[in-house]
Length: 163
Image 1 (spheres, one colour):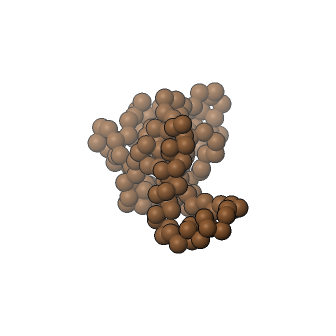
Image 2: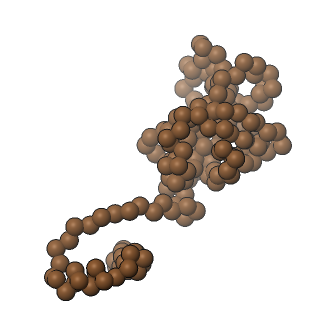
Image 3: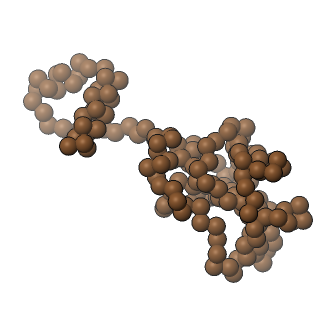
């Protein structure tokens, strides 16, 4: 199997947790397929695009520069599936080949968890709460700065999880 050293999307390096690059053969021809496990932040950043400019550096030093089509795979770990049509597959003869009738596909999710991914890049989400509180607590909350409230709630939730 051909190994990937680094990946850039539109000139920006991304952290890849696991990957597989292979040739997919169907009745309509050959495509170069790239499956990558990335962070939720990377998926969110690129999911609105149909095509991306990819720079893939292989472990043997080869570079693949291509405009690739993007598919977001839902369920499981955050991942991107990128592909482009190939006219000549001779330069890719050392890549794994998968036929549309095969039951085997690279399983890049094995051996990694969402917790491990979030240790590297934790997404931050905005949340709104509706609470019924005594007026003095409401007044105190309103007098606090947003950053301070974020810290207070993060600390409270962490302490609550530990107990």
